[in-house]
Image (cartoon, rainbow, N blue to C red; front, side, top):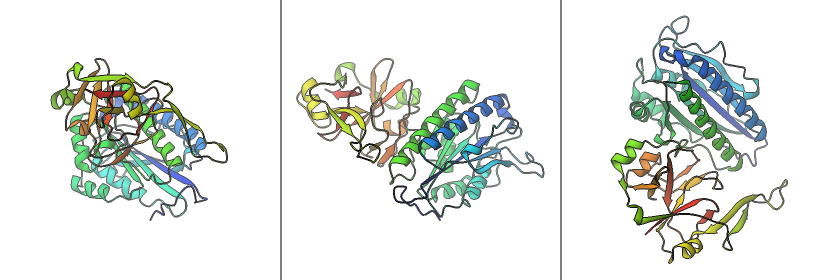
Length: 377
């Protein structure tokens, strides 16, 4: 059983166990070279990040298909098991797609093996990615078994799924993957797997950075929040507000601004600058007086914003189309952007088409200079 020791007080430090469960069914054959290239790139990125964060990062890589994929009738192969990230070699020559997709069975198998990983000393966390280009079509286990297994994991486990379409998303949710940890990727092209690799790299970087600086952080159910927003879901389920009903303003540096610093450390006795900020009430009184609680919606993720942001479960969400500046609102907005209906610490996810805004219910929220503020009239 994990000790959940604090990295600040445990001399053994942080151990981050990353696992990749790669679909190796025959439908992935056209992406064989791209998968190798993307995984090798992820490994290189995690090697550098492990050293920079002084994190004992370890990697497990599985490839799975269906019965008969492996000699003797097996359907899953472990290419690397909990191996020091600096010792991982290229996947070239090892990844071989063929067969069908035993996603449920393979996820259960991998979870059961990874549960055997020793975690006695240090602060251990597990980040598990299941990557598939199609829905489960071979299984001995039922979806309910996987759902119970994932639902019973310790708080230091983060499980995520990459699926090809909305049907895959619905299936993954039924298997027990948190909605905020499910990402839809384009499984039809090499560009799609490369973009998925970038999203995985970004999510993992935020996860590891938060873990290195926040001893209370164990795992997340919102790994991909904001990283993708379905355009059809926005237009079919949310209300488009008239442009005259809101203003969108950029927070500028002025006499209202003040600089914030991290807590002092041995390396930085004065702390490091977190950037320039202004209070929401002061800023709104300047640009759109008078200030009223609830009129302002802050930009969730942007340059200069926090690495992670706690979003309360009762906060209203607004979604903006970046091309048209059209604002959409409605009770289903939280689900569409991947936010759960409870308080959650979320990490940034870049989206080329949509921006997410959260209703502020305080008078002293600190807005990073350079971010946008949505003001309802």
